Image (cartoon, rainbow, N blue to C red):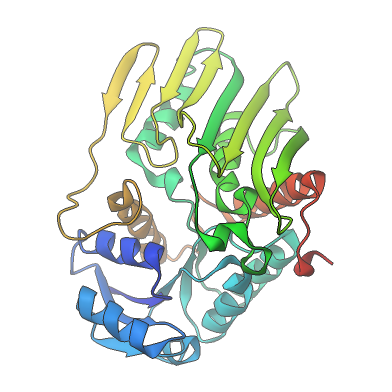
Length: 333
């Protein structure tokens, strides 16, 4: 089976995803079209990546009957509307995080995907790195005993207006938060009751530029996370148990190294010589593309490693944190 892809938007993350796709078997993945609101940008993107067709609107790429699945890399505020258009045109979807702006939108989008019997996945690429496979195995084997504490920080100097402005759905919670949230949910279980306490600072546009969050679970278990867009943090993650600890070496959201009770394991990235990347370890974006292929080939409508329920839980937690910080978007009304 050859999965024929369309790329929706011609921005930096779409560039990186398309570069990473070049490392995958051509008899499994083929990028056949790209769309942007600016036709010139789509044309340039197509030229750079040797994509046969470029469109100047998202509606045009949705109408292409030869596309099986689309990668949606538009700004946060457009996720629901663009994904809805793609689903209504019969396309499977891999959508950049956050899946939508809030829980209400995410729930609506998932319902549409299910009604159309189409695959939909939030692109939380961390879940598909080999380091995370090792993490899951170590936790299953209880190699560090009973886990009681997690710490994970994600801080970078971010200058992008997309993250700084409310009109684009900005803020560190929606841009970075899913990575710390997903790790806490993976370690402590998504169905475990929890309480959230968050504090942070807002910028002049009233979106969050930093956030410290504590998630309290039963039986003495706690996750502590920091998000920051002003300073770079030590972006490792630590999971502490009664018999030792696990360190996911920075960058913990796209890692190549993990240490379990003092023993280090390394998992090199795929060959990255076939593209020019904007972001750290973007060659690993192809891990999630491989998962999309596996799921669609097997007729699955969601990934067991990054399920619809995962996305809904993440969205509800993000809503709670933003509410505690005082960040509100028009769609929250």
